[in-house]
Length: 247
Image 1 (cartoon, rainbow, N blue to C red):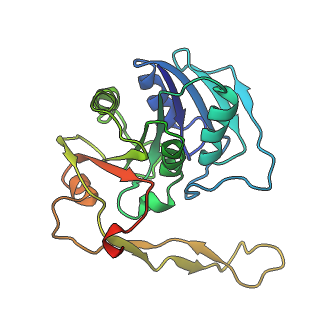
Image 2 (image 1 turned 135 degrees about the horizontal axis):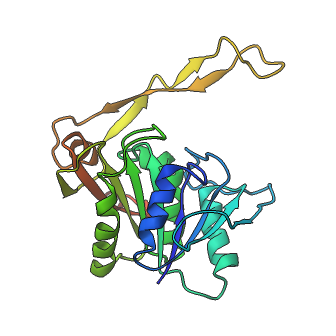
């Protein structure tokens, strides 16, 4: 089985290294990742910038092939399909492990999930993995046993066309697994005026921040609720954004 592993935090982070090593238990792994952080890029593609591809030979990923690019996570999927696996099937794309939750509306902004959306558009089964901490040294050992087990189960059950899975893990011990839906929520207070370190020639600039607001805190079937109760959240997502109820 040909497995492609991507992320949006950049090559070399703890999340993608663990995910790649675990996926070698299931098949032949090829890693292709950005050469630096691309968080928040969604499914953005490099329209005007030439996209590089570099082979990395010094690593300890259990025999996986490793490539980096100056592109986005979505570009990684296109490079895998059109260049690295030209004329060959990709049986699974796995994205992550993202350092930071991609639950609720975060899935819309996420480069981790953006790669999964592109894979789903190409007919490649895709699974995104995230943990609810932005710390680069977050303890991943509680999540590790679930990576191959859950991935194998989802493959055996079958991943529907144009669908991918968004999996979010709590920090610390995981007490169970829950099928969930996306929580209804929004971000507020998202921009902070900068008082120093302004871009050259600019008198005013802002940096992104923000606070997440759960608009349905009483709901017990959401991805946010699951993580708050130390459960691994699995949410099926579709790239068909049609609101059929409005037709």
